[in-house]
Structure formats: structure tokens, C-alpha cells
Amino acid sequence: MHIRLLFLLLILLPALPILAQAPPAPVKPTPPVAVIPDTLKAELNIVYGHTPEQELKMDVYRPKEGGDKLPACVLVHGGGWVAGDKERFTPLAIGLAQRGYVVANIEYRLGPVAKYPAAVQDCNLAVRFVRASAPRFGANPNRIGAWGGSAGGHLVAMLAAAPGEEKFLTGDNRDVSPVVQATVDMAGPTELNNEKSIENYRKQKEQSYGFKWIGKLYDDAPDLYREASPITYLSKDTTPILFLTGSLDNPSRDTAAMDKLKSLGVPTQQVLIPDGKHGCWMKAPGQEQCLEAVDTFFKSYLK
Image (cartoon, rainbow, N blue to C red):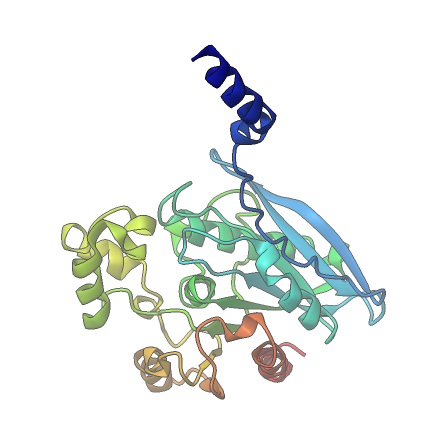
């Protein structure tokens, strides 16, 4: 008996260190780091505001040449108001800066950190910061646009529609105008309380993006969802808005806002990216097509 046990131990002992090792954790692929061209100047992680939850930062890109009164753009990433970061939109920031703009690629408070209206307030503050800092960035304070994708598209639409709403004004530079001269809403909703959205809220309940960002179920706070909708604030004073989306990404989401803007006499249009799905701006060929559409639109109102 003892001989058999000794024999088994002799066989198993060399393998024990291997058996005791935990399986290696899966390695997440590191996203490629965007290369900043030599023709651009970049200032990264500039603090543009302080909140109880976090510092707010932006990355600013601009051409090294071109003068000290370039048109500017505040760029706002997406992620369902609850995820994402400014680095996700770095390629868009670089691409637009290469076309002759000062681009402020911003972060904002996400739903898990602070509920509505925090993100709207942060975007408003970012515009005021860029305008107040125009001499530092070589920007024209009278030629500032906004561009956002998905949830970021919604947030820049709020900038366009409700710049002067008191509830969205926080932080420094309160005496500086938050008005943008042109806006690109890229696949962002403008009506959080339309029939389709309400149907989804009721189906998804606490799992809906609306609940995760606003913090209340629709049926408990319908007025809050209306308040958080850009279409609520559209007026004859709203500045021009381009709606940019993939042809396969529910282009009809823009119809109600476009119809209202047209009835008010506000310049608006929609550009479709052929065969584009949601997020088509993240890679070729959609990324270049989006940049071209944004540049063409901004040339009409910012340059």
C-alpha cells in the first residue's frame, strides 16, 4: 500500500506547480493610439471645469499654421450617456483639425457618475470655456460649432436648442455666451419622449439608457424626459443644424426635429452616409465621409 502511494506521489509531484496555477486572465486588445501629425499642435487633458464628482477635461487640437482666429468646434463623444470617453473620438478631432479648425474634444459626466442634467451642463460649460480661452487656442470666439455622435449628438443638439436655459448653466464663465454658431447632430436622438422611445423604456425598464441617465422611469417622470429633449427648445433663434447619419441607421429619427426647424425658418439638412450603420464614423470609409460632410457644413457657417 505504501509503495503504491509513494509511486503515485512521484508521478504527481512534478505536475503540482502547473495544476496550482490559475488560468491566465484574458488580455484585452489595446486600442491603437492615434498619432498626432506634425502639422498639428495638441494640448491634452486641459481642465475646463470642476464638479463635486470629477474634474472635467478636454483635448484641444489645432493646426500649427493658419493664424490665430480659426473656427472652433466642441466635439462630444457618444456611449448612451453612460459609457465612452473622449479618446474614442480622437481620430475625428485630428481629422477635423487637419481641415483648419481648433477642436476641443471633451469628456463629460456620465450617467453612473451624475444624472441628467449634468452632461448637458458640462457641454454648455465646455463651449463657454473654449470661447473664454479663444486667444490661448487661436480660435475665433464668434465662430464656434459643436459636433457629437449618438448620445453626443443629443448633447450638442441640446447646446443648439437650449444654450441659455438657466438649469444648464453651471461653473465658471457665466458671463460668457454658450451659443454655438452651427451644430452637427450625428445619429443622436432629439425627442426622448416620442412613441417609439416610450415603448422601449417600458419594455427595458431599469435597463434602458434613458433610466440609466435620467435616473427615473419614464412613467414616473414624463416631464423630465420632455425637458431633456432638444426638440422641446427649438426656436427661431436656434442656429443651423446638420443631421448626419448612416442610411441604415434609422434616418427617420431626424424627421420631427427637421420639420420643426424648417417651420421656424432655421437652416437644416440631413446627410446620409451610404450603407452606414450606427457608429459608421468610427472607421473607414464612414469616418472620412463624416469628416467631409462636417467640414462642408461648417464652411458655410463658421468660415
